[in-house]
Length: 68
Image (cartoon, rainbow, N blue to C red):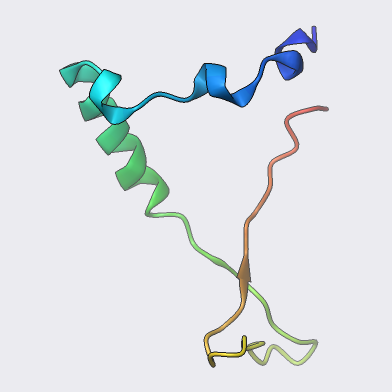
């Protein structure tokens, strides 16, 4: 059932002040876990880093296909 794709994002968004103490603790654990993910770094075909206009290595989000 793909009906959940029809639900607006605001239905899944909460202010931190609306969370219970247990939910805040779980959120902090999630933030910590996601912080361990490695960045998706851009490189050219010779594995040289591709830099943005500020000289920092370009990155992109790694998207997960949730619709298949």
